[in-house]
Length: 240
Ligand code: PXP
Image (cartoon, rainbow, N blue to C red; front, side, top):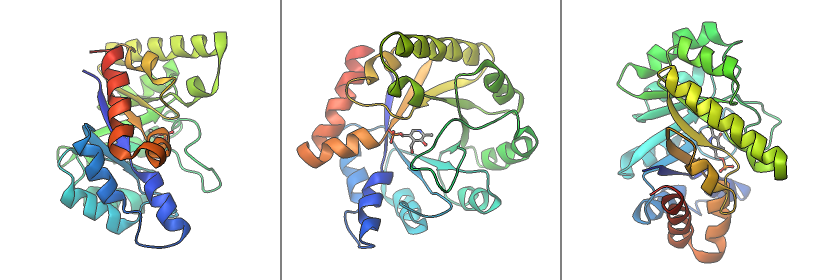
């Protein structure tokens, strides 16, 4: 079964638009869990534009599924992560000017730092994942630095159409196969929505899909429970 992990960042984005106390990403995460989310993901960004440190602590205290923390390689973030109690960490590139994470982590360029960071994050038994493009060189480097998982970046697939999208899906498929052959476990995510999710649920060896924006956006119309249930159903129908 492919597990749906729901990213709650953009509930915090709405709250931070007014620097208010609501909507509360923790209450929304609890509703997502009741509707079938098997994990909750959040990204504590260096600029704290959405999730705040207090949200991370409250999520850890209150959610009952797996907490997956996305973070950059900055020393401050690694220290926070080590004391966060999250069961999973996903290392992502971060650029202050971007609207959302663009491109995957350059594992080849960051090999030195990752060799040191991954064992520190994994010390308490947490799973460490690297968010990468489905590029063979990045996958090989991810295995070499000792990551347990890769999260394959589906953003390009999501933004393309027609034969270009089919070609990117094939790149993701080959990337998932290569990752598995090298002993890496495989997750995927970014830019997935109700129309494009099904083929990604069929990627070989994929264990978890991380989906945020599309679910948050739909929840404005139908409520969080139905938005999560609909996505969960699409994934389970594609790959029971
Ligand atoms: N996976 C990673 C590593 C991400 O950085 C994000 C965005 O925060 C997602 C998945 C979810 O992307 P989206 O919000 O487009 O579903």
